[in-house]
Image (cartoon, rainbow, N blue to C red):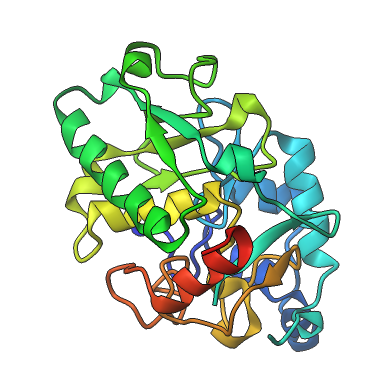
Length: 273
């Protein structure tokens, strides 16, 4: 999640190039043009592990994945979007979710590399997981403290790791259930997590944890009017401009990323009440 560098749109690529790519049909009609893939790639933040960060907090493994994302964006006019808050990611038309057995035991660790900020990150993670667990009894996040000393994606004691970033380019980013084991981590900039005005740390990590359950950004829906991402999602509820999964800077109506009744309704629809 990137608050300080998003400008008009909450994407990890910056500037007018993103604006053009986000609404290709409109821009083409107005003659403003669409950036080439080379331009888009150059404007997209690449993390130290080689992943490209798009949509503010969603990682793509490599340049090939970025190219696929770009092709999908350029070839998907906004006017084709389903008009009917929470939306689930889809992969080849299927919901991107955990099995009932897996979602009931989502183990994680919090890296010791957070140093003196670790306890604050632990609290934020606990607050964030509780938001989703209260909405569905099927969901259970389990912290494995013994894994904290070697908290990486290579640790087979846990489903995912929470690790500090090596960059100040974004607050946090997460993954989807379909992500391979080597990409299942939440990267957090602890300084920004704990000092971003109006956004409580628990809500920020709650947003990222929503991605780990398969939920997309609410503002990719046409009702938002900006920040379109792609068509790979299925609606679960009515549009919710105040959703925890809706960036406030993308015409959202929540200032603090709070969890809403429609968020609870959406997660219950997907995983059970």
